[in-house]
Length: 100
Image (cartoon, rainbow, N blue to C red; front, side):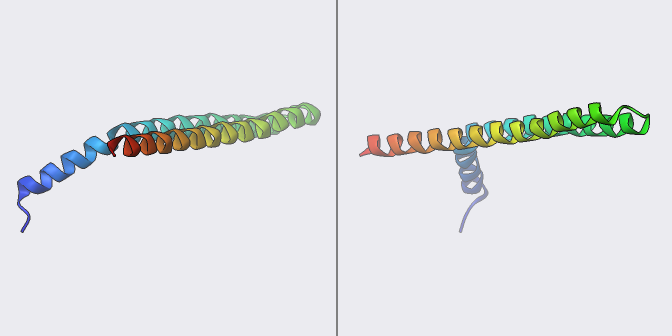
């Protein structure tokens, strides 16, 4: 039967193992959502500009830039995720090999 101290020791040791990765994931997620929020505000601004009669040709240019900004943010964060995953796997492999 598990005691409360065993359970708290397990939780503390598990948190110690994953703490650094969780901080990185939460930080990246907050940054990603901040960027999406900024793009959403720009989206609303573009629609407001269209309602106020801003020239269609200029709006098309801004909407194209807005589209490419979405793709750039997606690409940057996917590349960052892949790089961090590869580095994490590499460190895990090196750590496991050094234990033998």
